[in-house]
Amino acid sequence: MPPHMRVGDADRERTIEHLKFAFGEGRLTADEFEERVASALAGKTRADLETLLEDLLMPMPAPPPLVPRPMPGPPPWWLNRPAFARMQPGRERGWSAAAHWSGFCAPVLGPFLIRRSVGRQSPFVRDNASAALNFQLTCLLSFVLTPLLSLLGDVGGVLIGAMYSAIAVCAIIGGARAAGGDVMRYPISLRVVK
Image (cartoon, rainbow, N blue to C red; front, side, top):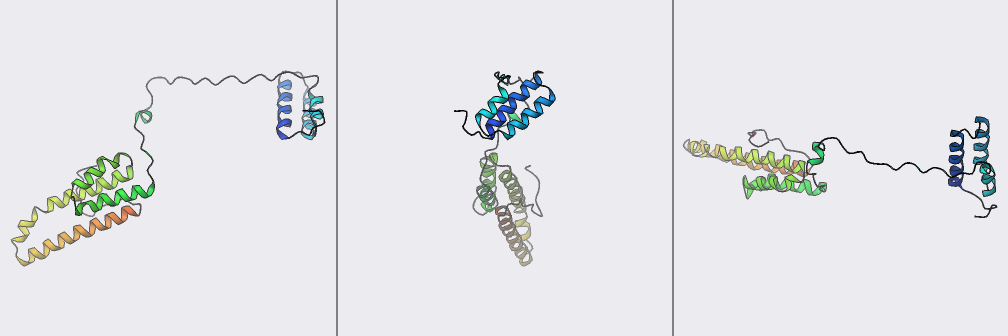
């Protein structure tokens, strides 16, 4: 680059770094250093900057290479743990809703399979599938009461209908809340799976 060419901020910064190094080695006094830094900031051409370094021109030492230090002992537990694959929020909510609604076509088995497969990739899906699985196991236990309620005649039939309707409504609400990004906590549910 010819001496009359204009310089930029990066050139000025390099010159100031050379001046700092020379000052640190005691080649410049504090007054000389301040004067030369002010001149470097005001410099417009390469010749302006070269005159500041003529009596100091020396290569800057390269910074020492960064050597990674070995970690003592075994790595922390979070490095050994398989990381959750980042799943898109829409897919997470879809699988979570499917865990709740799977009770209509595959009770207990649907949320169990979703928890075991997709639940390993997303804690949100796993929480929703666990809640749905607990609720559907509770519903399975409530079906044991169906023969006892049928002994009550018409009142038992109404209670059975109300029970099945409540189960369906809770599953629909659970799926809707999961699709909205929330974990459904059913009002009556045994905590069998955590």
